[in-house]
Amino acid sequence: MPGTTPVWAIPFPYIGEVISPAAFKNLADAVDAALDTVSAAGTAAANGRRYVKLSRAEGPDTIATGIDTNIVWTTQLSADDPGAWWTSGANIILPAKGLYHVSVWNGQHAGTTTVLSQMLRVAVNGVFRLGRRPYRAGAGIAESDGMSGLVYCSTAGHALTAAYRWNGTGGPAAFPDCGIEVTQLVTLP
Image 1 (cartoon, rainbow, N blue to C red):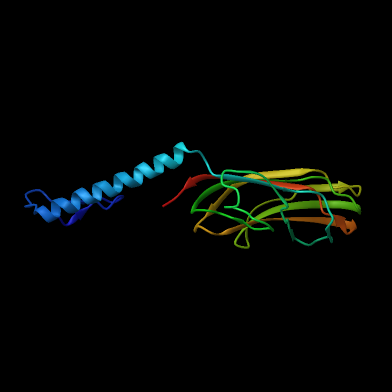
Image 2 (image 1 turned 180 degrees about the vertical axis):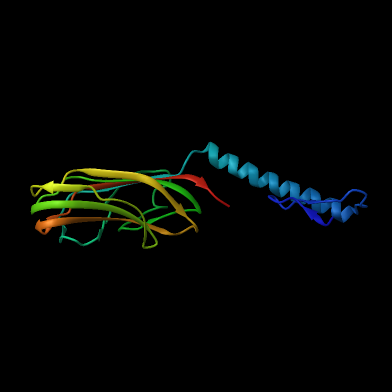
């Protein structure tokens, strides 16, 4: 059987081709494998999306103006599989190739004279993929802010990090309380 389907690579005979018992077995095995793959995907979808939600309390660390500082998470609020995505530190390990929804937010911080802007950015393996930088001309307290968006992960095991930055005068600023929620929307083959 020289032909194969484009998605599942299931072999098929051409019109008029004589099919041997071995070729028919190969066809049956390929169909079984494709059905197992579809069944596994259905089970994963029925069991719900994978997710992790983390936070860190304000301080005691400080941040100088104009410097991207990775947020080091301190508390796992909830997760579908505790310990699988995060154990400590700044890295959240993405469990599979796929599309993820990321929401990250920060609370107010003090300890500065003026705050011109603040920024949240999300990186996958050190490459920034998502960011928000609102303009905040004002006194020395940065406002609470947040953002969300979609992040694509090309390989299981990539590290997702979030960074915070402020620009202004005075400081260093007390590190604000922060949170992040990462939900796996789609797993890709």
